[in-house]
Amino acid sequence: MRRRGRVRALWTGGVLAVLVFALLCLSLCVGDYVLPLGDVLGALFGGGDAGAHFVVIELRLPRALLALLVGAAFGMAGGVFQTVLRNPLASPDVIGISSGASAAAVLGSLVLSFSGLALSGAALFGALAAGTLIYALSWRGGVVGARFVLIGIGVGTGLLSVLSYLLTTADVDEAQEAFLWMTGSLNGRSWTQFWPLLWLLVVLVPLTLAAARALPALSLGDDTAAGLGSRVGRQRLALLACGTVLAGAATAAAGPVAFVAFVAAPVARMLLPGRGAVLPHAALTGALLVLLADFAAQHAIPGIQFPVGIVTSLVGAPYLLWLLARANRVGRGG
Image (cartoon, rainbow, N blue to C red):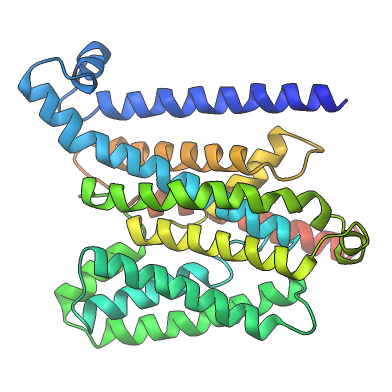
């Protein structure tokens, strides 16, 4: 059974990777100027004409790769939070982590005139500050998933009030630009946003996967995990820290793209029933969701480009309502 499970996990991961690559190629081919796949591949490997090279390398490739990395980071972060806290609502965009990044970024942009890497750093700092505050308020000799989620929702609501105040007192043009960023957008993104996120993930992903070796024991409950020799508090803190930084890094690059972290891990678990959360599969699912959502945002209505966060919200909001309705039915015995 274990071997069958491993084989299925490998096959599922391979299929997800192929779908991600196919959608990446489609994103590079389709646009105002449609390119054949051969021209795209030629541009990627240094051939082709100058026009195709500029369109692919300078315009489309950084956006597509950034969508892939942002989705992977959000997907893995969601998988970490939902598994460690054993709660399907424990997602960075639900429990206030993304709100902390947004509040710090908007404060840095509107009040401190930050831009570029300084603005990204502010968003990452805000995510870490929000995560630290939620963890501290949730600690009662340990961290319980339901308490962490409820306190996170409360902290997130307070941070949204701060955001509302900043936007209503700011200049109209600056507030409009900040609001666009808060929806989660890849419009106008370039290599400037891609490289910092890539180097962060080069460090974060191995650390998260190393810390995730404790997940099977933690998923059995604190007492059982402690009986098996796990250092429950330290391991949970390490995983939550990794998930917080992953979510903050993705938010710094593209804004708080809603519901990707919330949906990616449950979809990955549906593809691998009985195996719990598999973080690489959650990352691939998140990358696929953001690539697909960004493709739809660019091409669903000719001549109009939507922020990618609008499309992901259209997918995630019904899932959240279904999850709440299902939890309500279960709570009433039915």
